Amino acid sequence: MTPLLAHIEGIGFWTRGLPSWNAAVVHASAGTLVADAPSRPSPQLLPANERRRAPETVAVALEVAMAACHDAGREPSTLPSVFASTHGDLGITDYMCATLADEPRSLSPTRFHNSVHNAAAGYWTIGTGAMAAASAISAREASFAQGLLDALAHLANGDEAVLLVAYDGQASGPLARMAPSDGLLGGALVLSRQAAAGRPQLSVQLVQRHGDRDASGPLATLAAANAMAPMLPLFDLLARGNGSARVVAGPDHDLLVEVTGAEAAHG
Image 1 (cartoon, helix red, strand yellow):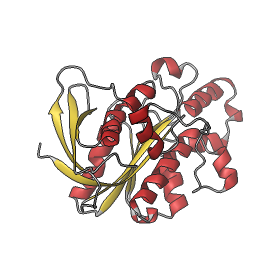
Image 2 (spheres, rainbow, N blue to C red):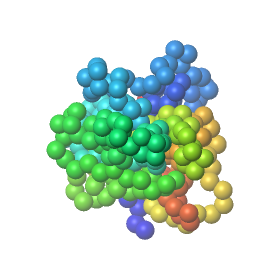
Image 3 (cartoon, rainbow, N blue to C red):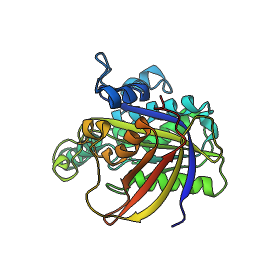
């Protein structure tokens, strides 16, 4: 596979105790958490009443997406977007299954609306007024890697820049045994074809898996139980600077991601 290239213009990150990419970078070097961090994101893209009612998975996706666009200095409505989630919102899926089994006529239209896998992409495109393409991807533990490949394909196909958003939330009920996921985690990158001063470049290629995958970085350790944890070796690498990391792309393959050109931990 010929390596695919991209430049990182902006980064967004949120997990409990680390409500920003700056906090994540500090944690990666010093091991500290933000003492008064909120328990859930409060995405300013949504009106106040919708902000309170939105599922946590939607809230974290919108929070990191807007943070990455702000970091990049990009107008969100101009960017095509890729939203990757392993499970969507498992809490709502558990509610849907239980309600359909016990009292199907009492099903909440709002929760049904929020149960679809592209709920976050829908909130994003409506909230920003984006008319560019938006896609939602799920590929089990390879969801982030497949989302990254989709985003890189946008650039290879001529788009100037693209927004990649990855997130997963808390599992509940019987589904938690089949599809475990703890906590709340989101990460976003604005990727572009053009170099940006002081911002890192990614070189990505598909390689055969060999040996154990290294997921021992500070961020990967902190949020290891979340379903989107396979993205964290890359974010640990970005917090350090230059180097390479492997990201799960399937049972027998990884994405080998090399980072160059980072002047220092970016935050």
